[in-house]
Length: 192
Image (tube, rainbow, N blue to C red):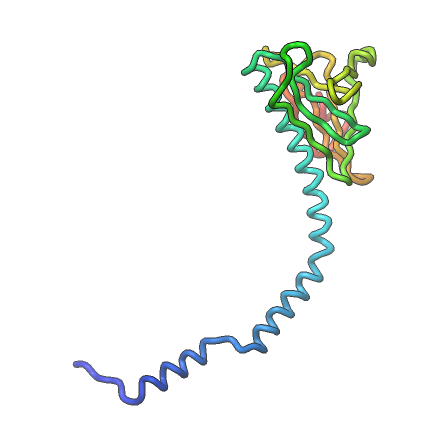
């Protein structure tokens, strides 16, 4: 059995529409609450983003190292990843003398609050072999990637990215000397 609703359906639908909508006062109240929450959370978020800056800079460097190693293998030409700690920059290009120029050379500048340090290998090499001249950059430390997938013996074994006094990420040559790895904290026993 079917029954029909009685009454004015137009009035009932207008009442339902009014009941579903937010008033201006409610919207202002919600916006005020959101503003208060953001003001309370902003100081802790600032520290989070500062830490992300250091992490992304170290990851970008590590990605560039892996790209340089694979590019050396695929092109059959040694690649150098140079690190200019004084200027706060690093980059990748073909080793000078193999071709006329490198159209795929890249360079990056560090963020303002991040600095990089290069540490010499445990077996001390003459400084003239650790720091070499890179065209357009000058006399800087570099990592050399050879076409046979090895890292040059004169390459630094540790690169440190620092932000502030306590935050540091270490890029360390792996135990088998075939790649670089990232360590968030450094201890004397972390290497081997």
